[in-house]
Image (cartoon, rainbow, N blue to C red; front, side, top):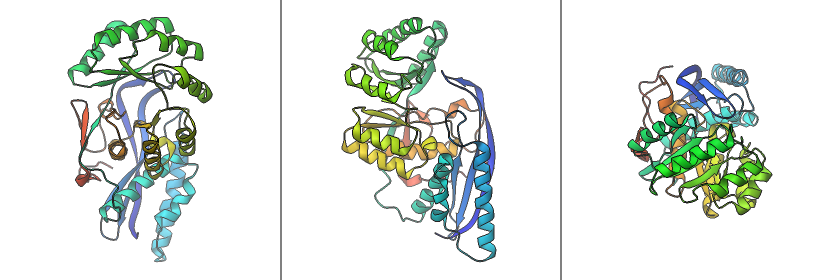
Length: 352
């Protein structure tokens, strides 16, 4: 793989309104777009966007590493030495978001060069979950009705953890409002404790609640809850690395894993996790960490590679005031239509 040009560009995308969950508030997303051009003239992109409060690395750390790579490329170009992307990537062990962006670009190049066989899925409809937050009753139910009118069949409810008993009542009002064709996912982001979760799983509608995502912080408690809960318990933030996920998939009784590839550090590793989970009959849900349109395109590919007809957490495009390019995978009727023939997208109107 011979690189003719390597560069990176910072971006800063504002949200239409702050996104609030039990642990953080997001007003904007800062990151970098990596652009690579090979000797065939193929141009590809990767998204590097650490998420403050979740990523090990900082924005500044990513910038330093990208500058190092840029000058390494210039030095090798001046000396007519090949710039080997695979070798350069070995330094990204402790910079997961940077690895994600580079693997996205490299995989895109390999696909364009037709070096990757039997990876891309056929045409596939990908279900996407809508998102609402528990606020006051009137606003919450209004948001629910709006998503139902857009034909979302899976709705994720972000739970703040405040006033637990009142939130349980509102959750029950949500489940009373829907029929069996709609499933609810609850996401407390680890804000409940073990006892509260025990109460919740025994007092909510078990037919309409598909799963509870990361109810508590402690991974051992999640494993214990999975032993008896009549409502499936999924793990998300407790997974810190791809190795963590691999071990839990192989050794625990947890059946649903919500993975944020941009935070875990890679695309190749996630593909391997998808294959491992499929062999064991376990679910992998691909979830966005508020990436730009560039990063979300890679998430759509990963979601298309999973088995099972369940929704993924990719409904973040509408949260941004503007983005870097047109959205190639628009959500319609709660679904994305993914066609491998057009992957990776060209992003012809990209603004860098």
